[in-house]
Image (cartoon, rainbow, N blue to C red; front, side):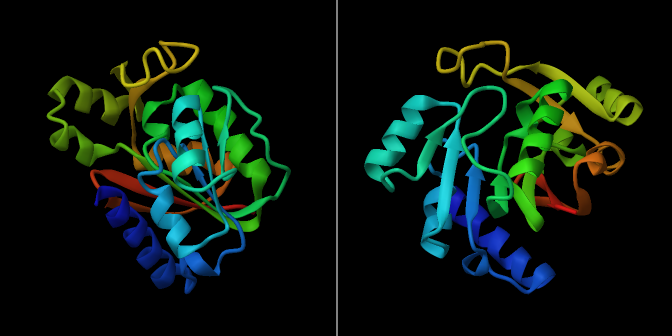
Length: 207
């Protein structure tokens, strides 16, 4: 139900903001598809949807049980096995919430490479609202106000499933940081609070 809710919210947002539902995009990629929690619902809305993930076990399961040959295993670092300007809609739920500052820019540039000009990227982040939702300390909140990008710990969810157990982190972004830094790769259209509950949705467009 969580994946269905997020897919439905993304579809409604796209209709309201761009007058295009998910079914009207030519090719869709769910980057960080995992076990297809969101991807399976995107596929119902648009059959021209693909998934990509670093967890090879999940990718194999999705190809057997969700849609054959639609899910691709990718490395921890770019590139992905897609050509330039392949997709006009890319979603990435709960991915940038776990990347170091260096790695996030590697992936932003890769997403820009495979996005068509004018294409849309929807990516979730943990912002100020996540402080309360995750019951984080006042000290972490003060760091977010001061530094705008904060790594507040490692995340063990992928331990044993990816090549580098230290790769997966817990991070926070301020809106100001995203507008100032991510705009080197995309036009930042909007940041929608908690649209991907409890995460904020960053809406980007390929120039």
